[in-house]
Length: 459
Ligand SMILES: *Cc1c(COP(=O)(O)O)cnc(C)c1O
Image (cartoon, rainbow, N blue to C red):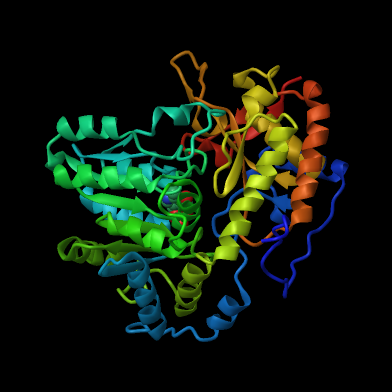
């Protein structure tokens, strides 16, 4: 290409207005929300970077397909289309539709789990871990050591530590192991990619030790982009074929279509083995729905079929990864500390380094999340001691390993000017950073407290 600028590879056909607000209005909204952005009304948010899950904009083709949805209870043509599409992409024989990713996790890991079992992953996503632990099994994370260093550059920082995997496989019988799960990209590990080489090594070890290998493939298209651009030998392969190669290494996958499915709701489970699929199908019928719709309506299945194609479009993927990277690069150049390199779907700011004067037990991540909202109307999420902190016997905080703030970018939703605006807000935050104060928690629940906790600013 002759030109440097990569522009959004779409035109906007339908618009959703953003309601403007002033700083003093936002201060009031946030006070009413007890300084927890999860408690804000979305109409009071200017730029919503809370999550990339289920927040994608559908294409005009996807919207048009909704009218074609076949809502038959059994044998829906929308299901036949979706099943064919997923078989073609994944190569797996048995496809089970679910209402979102965690439903597939509950079925598969609930069946394979139970007391005395372990699951091993580069990093279990929180719903994956919750479903595994709920079954009574243990979830063990073994990311490569480089992933613990926020600023350390590595092309595939989402990889699994295969030496540790080998040790674990040697020290447990194959009956004790519920499964090995590669999360691509590694969401909880900063949206970092996994290399094909790593997936091949994991696959070979699993075969050797006779244990099942699954992909948590929510962001498999974004991961394929990184393989094509960073891993030797893949430059000429299409993104879709890179994904296919990765699927061919595994025994099955769980997908939340709310990410790379480019839809607002949906997911699936895809499996190689018939007996395992039969067992999962029984559970699917009890809790999700009949085998030809799972938890989905016919129109959802139409949109997923198209989304799974559109997401591998070369221009889309280039724009997607580049626009996330652009935001990260600009912040990095301004001196904002963040996880490097930039992952596929989000930019992760290191709030502990940004607000060095705020002690960890006054939640620097929460302070940044609140400043972003007050100053710029930007909603983000704390991934630090509010989310993962625990208390010791004296009631003192045991902090999380990192105090991060995630800016997750919805797919096809915001334009370059929205991103430029976010960068400008960060400039202001940088100027004012020494005067910002931390927070204390005034009310919290026992589980997943970050969703509902209430805060007060430390005076
Ligand atoms: C979102 C997500 C899930 C869970 O999917 P839901 O659709 O939210 O239930 C599982 N794994 C990863 C890596 C995810 O990002």
